[in-house]
Image 1: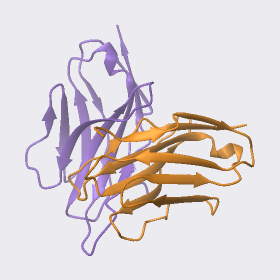
Image 2: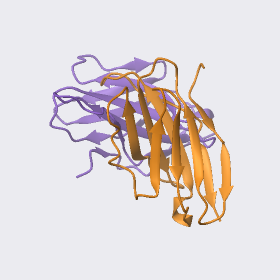
Image 3: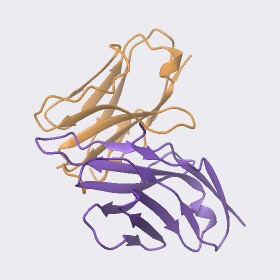
Image 4: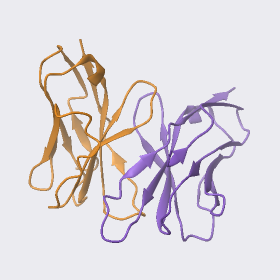
Length: 114
Length: 118
């Protein structure tokens, strides 16, 4: 597609339930990133995928968070046993590899845990 | 230590005036890229401007320019002729290059909320 597509755009879930967030990057972008943005805050790095390399999971806040990227394209971020502090906007971005390439962001998934 | 510091949580500017949003960064790499993004209330992240560490000239994109002072490690965003639609959160970010491979992830500052007054 022309841009980075994220779904769902909004998700309300009950505490303790699992959720899956999906990201479809720009075709040809080898790098894919997940960030989290809590209300009024900056962007917190979660995880990075680059081609067939092992992902950089250094930003995942707990073992309840996991992500995969299938076939070097679509990525799914899974949060198990959601907690209220997981409420945030989850942003996905993709880019070419290299320092002079910025990200193209998706419009995000707003997750609310009640 | 913070890699990207934006010291202005909020800024106000009158419509049609220029405004400078501050950003300082910290890196030991020689090769890096600096970016500014705009995030309006709708939440989307919009790329504005890029400056490479080896670029000798300041980057410009329309009403946006980046005042790059390498020795001071600052990369301030200048918006000329402010418009009401410029009201948004602005994030400075850096992408570092390292030998031996790196994830090249963008590190973001905490942002500056710009309000343009009519």
